[in-house]
Image (cartoon, rainbow, N blue to C red; front, side):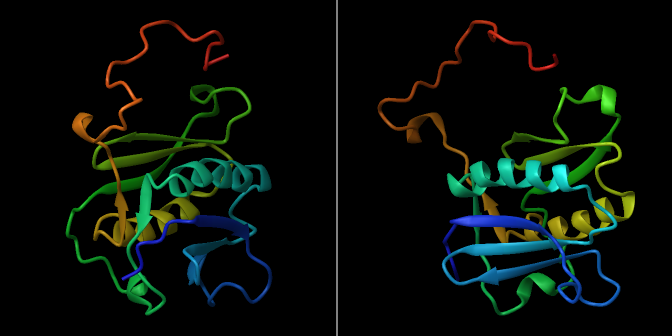
Length: 170
């Protein structure tokens, strides 16, 4: 099984890149690259940009690791193993920071993507959640959290106890 986690890249699908009747498709590429194609009538371009910005961090730094290969196992229906929970949830625009179309809220075993209303359709959200149920729920992608004893020597387990210089809700 692949244990690479170089990149996952979202694209607005061009004609012929999605199977008939599908809103989303994911393809594993050599070198740990996963291309995710989204139906152009169900997402906004700035949303896809935000997805890539966040995913570049989560996958590029190994916080999520790919555990499947190009044998097509991720296309099988979810088995309901409950390894982790990952979901997209559409939230009102007023609940999102200014200028952001997506945020990822994580804790050990859970990754909830908050999506600004109007950036993707509910049908796209449902299609992505079906894929995430298979990928995260069945452990084909693994969330990698460090316990305090696993932190590098230069890292501190104690939080920084000071307010941010700029409000994240501004």
